[in-house]
Image (cartoon, rainbow, N blue to C red):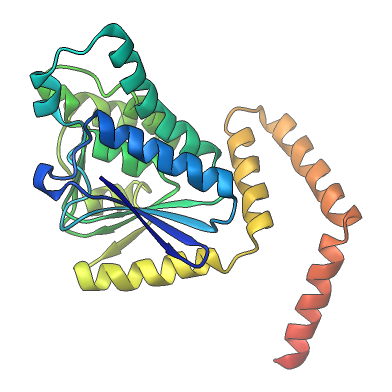
Length: 253
C-alpha cells in the first residue's frame, strides 16, 4: 500500500494502489501515517517525497470501500484520526516534504499534495477538492487551503469542487514547479529534491520552525523570535562559520 524507497537522505513514500487509482482506504491511511511517524522518529531524512504509483497521484478517499462497510464509532474515530495524523506529522516534520504529481490529485489526494511543503507537477495534472461534488465538505483540505492562499480563492476551491489545471495552481503559488511530461517531471524532481537535500539540515529545520510559528504569531512577536534566533546563531559560531566558508569560496573562485 505504501512503498518506501530510501536514497541517502531522501525518503520517497509511494502510494501503491494503482488498481484503485491510489485511493485511500483505512489501511492505506494508517500505513501512510505510520510511515511518516517512522520518518520523523529516525531524523535522518533530509527531504521527504510523496508520489503515487503509475500515472496518477491519488483519487483521495476510497468511497467504494467506504460504502461497502458499516464501521463502528471507534473505527470511524480511528480512521479519521489516522487521516488527520498524516497532516499533523507533515506539518511538524523537521525535513521539507515534496509532492510529485502526475495525472490526478483530487479530493484527499489534493489535500495530501497541498499538505506538503512543495508540489511538483506535470502541466497536464488536475487538482481539486471534489468532495463537494458528492455533497460533503473537504474538511481537512479547507484549513490547509486557508493557510496557503487568499480567503476568496481558498473558499472557491473548497466550495465549487472544480477540477483545476496545474498551470492555474502554479499561477496561484500552490504548485512550485511545472514539467512538460513524465520524463521532464523526473528531471525536475531530481534537481529540486537534490537542491533541498544539499542544504544544511539544521538550518532547514530551524527555517521550518520559524515558518510554523510565524504563521500564527503577530508580526512583532515573530520578529522578536527572529531576533533571538539571530543571537543564538551568532553566539553558537554559526555566523562566523558561514563567513569563513564564504571567504574560502570567494578565494577559490
